[in-house]
Length: 231
Image 1: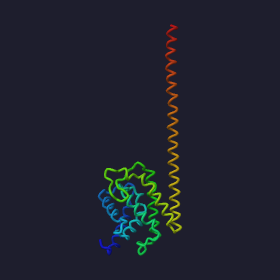
Image 2: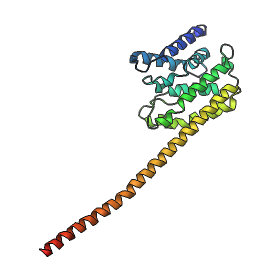
Image 3: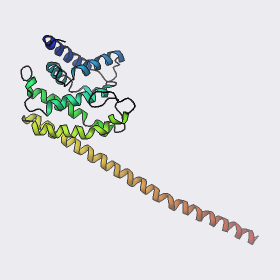
């Protein structure tokens, strides 16, 4: 589409993002509406040279809590959002966005979206995504899009954002996200160690019980033979 419609497209995409992020917990949205909304976002989140910067910026600015609304199938958008966020956070200049948006606000929105994506690989390590990072469908090779495989990429973008950030408030948000990630990783590691210790303890306690049962059976048989001899 012509660039002269970019301002209207950006406003329309931002409005759609605000509408869908207002979803209530028990509210049911028809799949046809969600699928059309996701197609719009996939088109607007393109980071290639043919992409429309106003549309991309509008989507990021209005989608800071999109992954917190429990929208059905929203995780299919994770690779596209990650690519767009990476494109913004790792660019110090952001020359494409300077003329129509606050760069501090755009980077802050990208940081908040990234923060909402960080827990996904740890909370849903076995969940598989049907899209790769470049937006193509996996086909039969679904394992390549696993959430757990995105964890190093997310961490790399977070560290890169810390290197390029110059605003104090945004830097604090990044450091807070890093702290949460470290604490979550520590809790998961501790929970895994506790589970292993519990399983090993149960396994060690089961063997004496089996041995004790054998002894008890032998003792019962001996008592029966003694009683028979006495009779």
